[in-house]
Image 1 (tube, one colour):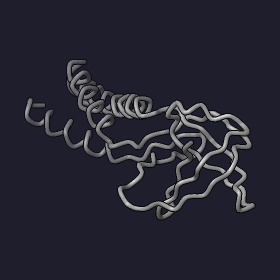
Image 2 (image 1 turned 180 degrees about the vertical axis):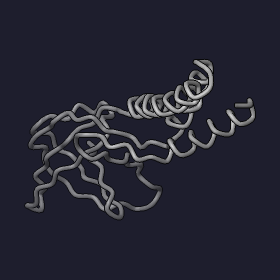
Image 3 (image 1 turned 135 degrees about the vertical axis):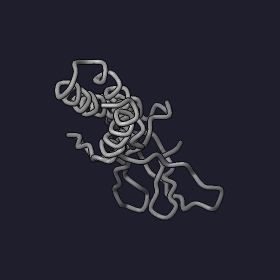
Length: 154
């Protein structure tokens, strides 16, 4: 197999591998909330419970793509003929899995699940990134909202 054919094969396989969905067990990921520069609705209440959680960030596919390229290149150095082609394909597949896992782990961050009792009488549970605010049961807090996005602040 010529070098150009190898590079094209590796590139095509890497592109396909980067598009493959990755299924992860556990709770669904939450997107971070960044308050916009417009008026927000505010409710006031008391923290009833705080539970630490892990927030999973999104995957761009870049980790899988880069991993499959590196795996394919590593596999191209193994064997000859049909064995070389199998090593390239195996390297692409394993590299994509490893790259995707590395990207997913790099995007994880600590978060909090806050259960609130609002002054309006409603209860709410909000999951958000842990910004080191040190919420504890009994704390008076504000619940900011904008078009379905919520954030608890002191």
